[in-house]
Image (tube, rainbow, N blue to C red; front, side, top):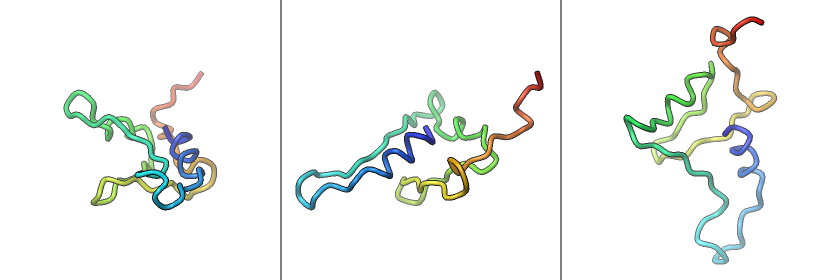
Length: 75
């Protein structure tokens, strides 16, 4: 999902009036069965939704998120 978020954000915006919406990515959010916040619990620094429901692209190095090391089992 994070890779797709970066990909969608890198797409050119449509010419004004050519399309109703620019590139976008939708997530299922239908609690309690599909709560998008559960998906992000694996990260220490998950992306946040703003008041309008938009998610900013992480700006930290790499993909911008860090997997919680406590959730990784040693081999």
